[in-house]
Image 1 (spheres, rainbow, N blue to C red):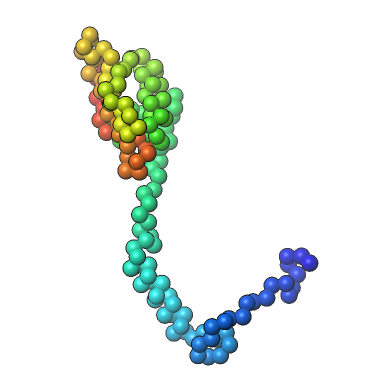
Image 2 (tube, rainbow, N blue to C red):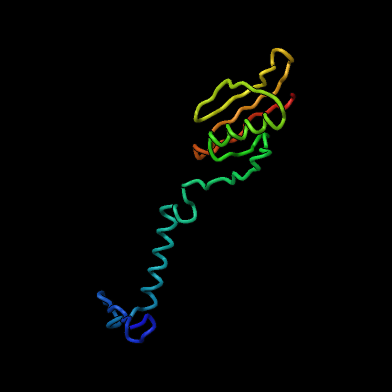
Length: 140
């Protein structure tokens, strides 16, 4: 037998009968079901208001990563790679003041020698994984 052969699929009989006989459902039953659904949706607050935060868009050019306030990176390791690429492209060196899974603070390695004032501060975004640049000064 094939999938499209007639008579293969039978409607399951209803096991719960109310009012109008076998399989009958009144308009008031169907309306009350939908009203119940609306009340339930509004009551629990989850339908349309999912507490899980959406993943932010973290697309960037890995050969020329943006280093400006508000830039996002998928995680700390990707951000470290992007920061290294940025330093190579712009021909400067940096040191890290803080470097842990939740944040990174870096500054120009020639801060004291040449007065370079380049600084960057990034930390985890609301989702706890994505990295967001929250402070940046590009005076090389």
